Length: 149
Length: 182
Image (cartoon, rainbow over all chains, first blue to last red):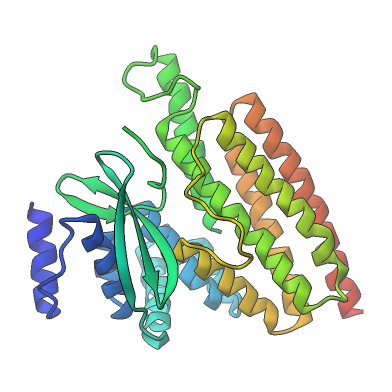
């Protein structure tokens, strides 16, 4: 519950009081809100750690493929706060330069009591994300795409 | 890269299974088919992620049709996908929500980003495309070496076959890069 309050406070500061993580749809909307605002800290809060790290590494790859020094650094992601900070900053800059992604037509499909798949459209294209329940909040979880329970 | 994380977690999960088995399998969540829920989750993700390499090679092969290495290898990548699918089926992992029909189209955003990044890099030049191939294969080999630790024999066998294939692919891409630079 404290987590929701924290998220709520953060989003209030960001002027986005309507967002929360109370439902799977909320998690997806928060994920896109964080991405469109290049807000890495918020993104980290709306995703499970493994999925968040994966996302950061994939987004950083485009920089790494053009910069050998950054490529070496990316291999060390997760090993030191300084490296993580530099990698996240590179991702932040990439997101800031990217056009915003608009989502619509969100539909929830239950994959069990603690999992839910969201089908939606991103800039008109079919997409889907998986979410899992953590206490009272739903988070983006790439590994939660399988029916359980 | 993405697979490295996924496979690492699968390895951890499998090691955890061994530890649970050693303690008499109390509360470990191991299923009747011998895989934990976490392992099954990772297997499904790996299946989805295998498509990235295949589609990248198909797209770059179309972009550079004179580079036969892409065409030669995409068939093997399809076999990698088939192997992952077979493991999913064997261990009861439902893949019905995954649509692999459209080349270069991924419903999971992070996989679309990975594919787009690799293709964008490859589109810069023929040499860059070949280097993308080298990158993908080195990453695959590294992933598989981590992944097979603690695996059941049947899974290890599959991964050994995949790794042998990746070494062949790496040799082919390196040869193409060297030929290009000559």
